[in-house]
Every structure is written in structure tokens, then in C-alpha cells.
Length: 216
Image (cartoon, rainbow, N blue to C red; front, side, top):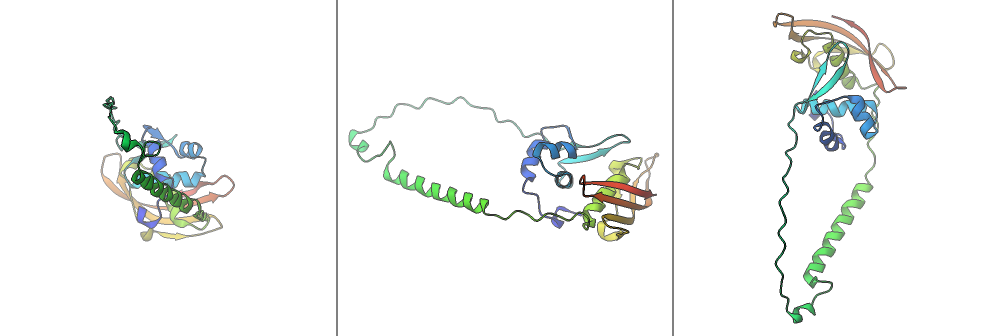
């Protein structure tokens, strides 16, 4: 699944600015910082992972995202030069109001109208519809891949079958069963293909996914 399969979250730019200031981050950190749901935070980091802003790391105890995009370069402030005194003709002052001539006031009025129009347009937008995660198997497959990766010798080398190449079904409400394969390096560094049969469960109460069963 690429970023073309879904709309970029409106919070994406702000989330990137927060994440790239940290060497490591997690779904819970993004969730708590922005005051959003667990799944929305997870999808934000998933989009960043697809754009190679962060890389997901997992071992037997913890899972987190590592920043791989460089920090934004800081702009060095330059000393401001004091403006040279300007001599203004007394007759010119008569045609200005508060130091601005008629053309400047006209442009300022146009700018104000444009800003107000943009503000009203943005404030009138209807909120995005909430995703029903109990029926969204694409999101569930994303979590299934992460759970499976934690059982591999070299998770960073994992190449999973695409969403459209795996067999999937729903054995029960909010449960997803995926049958597919993953290519990854073994202990000797050789790429091998491993078939998997995974069952992932989503719980509405705490807004989280769980690995219920995995056969590899």
C-alpha cells in the first residue's frame, strides 16, 4: 500500500515537524503530543515511513520509529541594519494617512479581504469521516506486517507480499486473517521466503490492534 491509496492526514506536516526533532519516537508519543487517537497516530507514522522520513525498528521488548530524514537546517540570523533617515517633503505628508498613501491602503484592504476569505473557507470545512477500523482490512494488514516483522531475524530486510497478493478474510467481527509470504534475511544473511498465516484483532475500547495468532 502506498500513500496513493489514502489521503494524507491534514495533521501530517505538523507531525513531521515534531518527529524530525527527535531521534526516536513512537505511536504513543505522537498520540499524546497531538491529542489524537492511536490509529491516527499510527497512520501518520506509516505515511512518514513510506516517504522515508522515519524507519520502523522492533526487537523483543520495544518497537519504535527512528528518524532517517535530516533535521531542518537552522537559518542564521543576520544583524539588521538601521535604516538611513529619510527626508520627506512636507507636501507629500498631506497625501498620506498614518504614513501610508492611498495605493498602500488599497493593497492592505485587498490583503485583508483575501485573508478573511481563506479563514472563512477553512473554518467551514466539514470534518473528515471517521474510519471504521473493524472493517478496514488494509489498515489491519499494515499492523499484521509489523507484528510479523518482530518475529524475523532481520526485520529491516523484510519485503512483504502486497495487500492485493495476500488472501484475507474476517473470521469474526473486528478480526482479520491474512495468508501470504515475506522475504527476509536469515541468520546467515541469505534472503529466504517464509509463508505466514496471521490473525489480527482490533479492539474499539482501547483503539489498538493485537496479534491473536501467527503461524510461520
